[in-house]
Length: 472
Image (cartoon, rainbow, N blue to C red):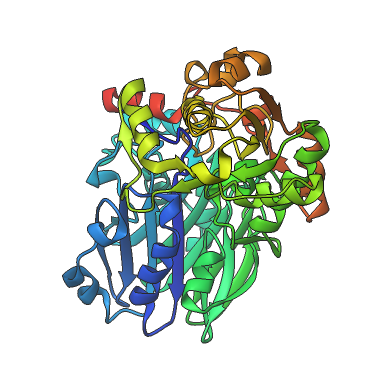
């Protein structure tokens, strides 16, 4: 089974401490983060003496019933999670937040990212008698924390985090505190906000906008924050720091109205389109963007090149869940359901199409074919990111090398495969220039360059790790 888009986020996180409408706000925040995961959702809340959780499969509206939400209403502290499976199969047992219970207290756990040494840790723990309930890499954190030694809970959490390698943004809920941690490379985003005196955290600032919270700042790599009724404690679990946030958060994943370090992704995507226009020497009548994530880049391209921008492709917003199809023919049918050209705009014209990325090439091939069928004279493809050539080990489902078209084909071969009259990718250098212009402290570009900032200790892709885990 292959997802149509071929490029998927793993998860969206939210947590809030000390608000009388915590569960309702968590639900609203998760709804705004739905683009980060559509396979499952859940909420865990603190009742002071214990934790209570609810979760389910599917979109948020499908996963959590009104009865479940009503049961969470009395609680003023909660964390939530929307999930797309990369590590761990698509099953209810893997839907987060996880809820663990022991005589020393309850633990709620929500995780975004991928722990690259999880399989090694899991095998060692199982050899020592541990029994795992899920195939998720996130569960190793709970087992390590339960075994950790230290004078305080924070000390034990630090010890646990120091054993993990990879990309992780954690939101951890105990009865009396909420702890937030980001890996020492800061691969996955995590933000701090405040609403009515209550602190909250989220994967994107669009969640704060949805509930009316104030965006305070981004969490720093290696940071550890504890929030309780006593206030907020800022700390670090490691002195090492090597900022490498995922480039695809800027290019595709995050919502256009979300901000990183005070700058919206819309502004950054528009700038990427402007830089692409400087590298793409093509004459055309109009520029169109592939909705929705490429519209800002198309606007930037149009502004910089002087070529008029038009809405030549429309997206069907009523398909429902992300369409999953097996087989090339089924994937092509799925694309036809989602995207259609506007004949009056494209007929008889030479067109530049701006997209944010090309993975398999299925969508690009259909777009070129559909535009030409609608009467376009020429279709030139511009991509506002470099050629995507390598799989991701850090929490994004970016297929295998065999399924990434640019992994084995040159730009000219990709152009011929999708049927475009020309194909231009943004260079890695110009991409980083844009990031630096808007205050980036370092971006992971491994999917483009193969320069992985964190060693993949397990040596497996998330989907391969899941298969190994099932057989452990």
